[in-house]
Length: 477
Image (cartoon, rainbow, N blue to C red):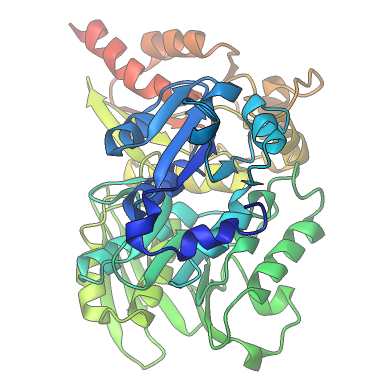
């Protein structure tokens, strides 16, 4: 079976139910959407994670067998005859995990996402959304547009989107996927269309240099199927300036706010309730576009989505109309609630550019409110590598709270901390508070009405938002 596991994804629907795929780290943002697609395709799915979450609960309700904690017995709950056909592992799972070791000892294939995504999508027309920033929002927008147009695509999104969830197997050849560069996961894909939102060095634990990061994207572009398309944001991912590729080798579609792009954004207007802009197409047509989510970055994200949808067969007039109803993705400028004239927003921003962009969007949406930025630095390697880029990043915030660094998959490193982030930021109203419960207490006692609190975290600080709303309710009772 070791050499032939790919045949699992060539089986007709009636035979899939006899085969089980086990996912180690099933509750993570990388594996949970894949697990849902596998369930919808008719495979048996089991998996394990350290603790229960909304994602594991959703998967369990859909028919997956979920084990809390990692143990070799999770692999074969009913004896040797019940062993899975394949084990899929998250990049965050150490290779000495007991389930991985048990699978290897039994000769069960163990693969990562980059190995599985190719066979899983081999017979689909894949639209892959890549880039340092904006992948989730752009992927969600494309899935929203194609679904709204009745094209019934499959999709895998890095977060949950209202009315779509995080993934679907789909019924048409179209498959939209968030193409994650971490651990080279996107190199398993052979897309027909690539949407490249931005290109800025990230994940230094995986790509130690800027050149290695760009090289991975060059390899990804080489994965494009013959006759495929590349849709790229000239403002944030100027491909011709980075990769020495002959222009005739790819079908290029550039977009952005600068002159010289094929799809040109202009006449931007932003308010607390809506964002509007004009879109000029290569054919000389003009469209007035309206978004329900704020930020210049989302104007660019939506432009890439509109181009991809139109190339997939959705008339632009229809796509523009459908875009108005897109409400955003979980943890992407997600408004958690408002209590006592305090608005609480949860956002995934963790790279300096993302933080600056998100806070700029908040300032544009709420020009007269006090803005609190609560930032949980993500990984020691990223914080150290980009420390020099934090100057001025929090300028749009009136108050700044920086928590202890979230280590994620990395060992503790006492030589880098939140005080250094604050010093680098040069923010005049900054507070270092290590403990997340202490952060909650501080916010509950110091945030005043007519404020906006943004939780900026790709780690564990996201729970602060809902708890702060509860604390404000108690304070105002």
